[in-house]
Image (cartoon, rainbow over the protein chains, first blue to last red):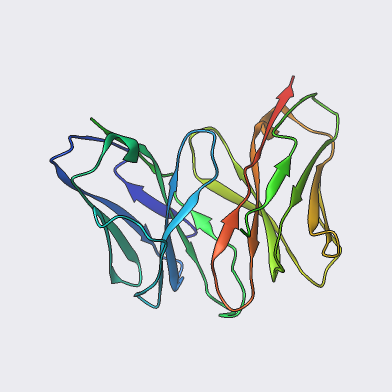
Length: 116
Length: 111
């Protein structure tokens, strides 16, 4: 299985809602990533988990809360979002074969989030 | 900032022509990667070139890296309509697994 899956594909939520994005991979990868991508812009790194521990938080607002329940799953919990948080949220994973060097990342198809 | 800058921002060519995209970055790197993204979809890894390599080929793709100029180029030969996508370079530094994406080149191949 060489796929990263993300659910849901689309999500519309109000500013007072709580929702979660889910990401799953079964490639034995030990690093997992969340990116945010606005239209016609590059992906921006939000969080990195390595060996199920949060390694990087790129100063993301606390209304985004990541969770890595096990080595195959990555969640992003959303609460009290703002309309400007509307974007494509991409999950990726990598093998982490060489800790000293960035790996090839495998991306999921993304969740298109709209905040009303 | 380590972020790569890509040039051109957009490129429109005829099917069968070659497409060249350039990427420049600011800090020392361990490797440089190129990714493709079809509209509104996830990114697909194309090729990785390490800092001690100067050129790499994969099918119709040729990547060069000039660390003295802090630049890389991606050449797609004999382009096809299916190559229409956004192309991003991504740089990574030693000592970590953080990857920073450049602004991207939007390629449109006309059939």
